Image (cartoon, rainbow, N blue to C red; front, top):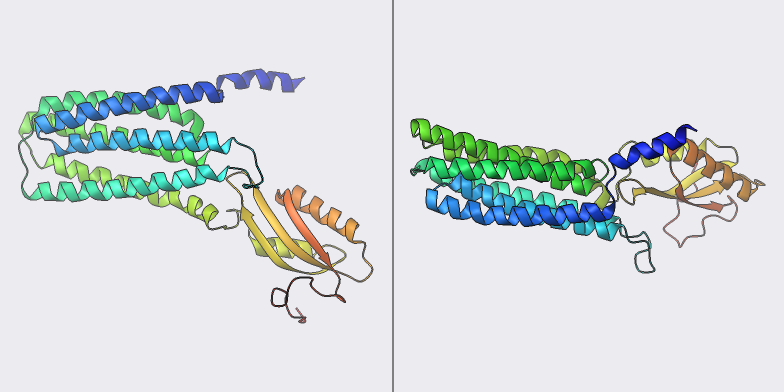
Length: 311
């Protein structure tokens, strides 16, 4: 059977949650150690880019802690208080992560701008060595999160965080080399500003799906009008109202709607057909449909129901 082969092949990619967590604990420890080295080195060498890179690495470690804490939370099932489960913890963590990146980028730009006006001398060797070390560690951390980032908004946020860092370290190395060769002092602040703009540009694109989920938006490829149209087209359904379509998390969406059935239609049969259509054609499986008859009107409280109109 072909299914078996598939099954064995998968073990290489999927890290068990436990090893994933252990690897991350290491990554966090190394990143925190690196932060101290870089900030100390930056103070000795007089390089704001190095200090910036160090602070950035610290935020990296924090991003990882946040991402994995949320991931663990998301694995908990639903309970009475959290009837949808904890999966949204990942979305919230991603939001916090991106907001932190934005604040960081703006702070770095402010620091660098001050330095453009009065660029101090920088000890290039310390900068090159420490940034080289940082680059190696950033790439290692990024490799760690990359495998996991494919199926989670939250881990993707942490991965981007790491990548931004690796980019920053490369820039800092280039800066150190240019300072050693040409004593070109403006390079340190200019690079810092470049790194910040790069981070902001990335965040702008990745924040949209996160906000969409938190704002109870419909999934990217579907919206409520399409659902309404498809439901109204079914036999036995006269009109549809109170349609709400939203994402529970990255993978699951939820739909609720009231269906006004034609006189004499069997509600159980119509709803079964509607649910089948929604699951098969629109991929919606978390669905609640409420049947109503034209004569009785909507069972909701006054005001929540559409007034009978010819549409």
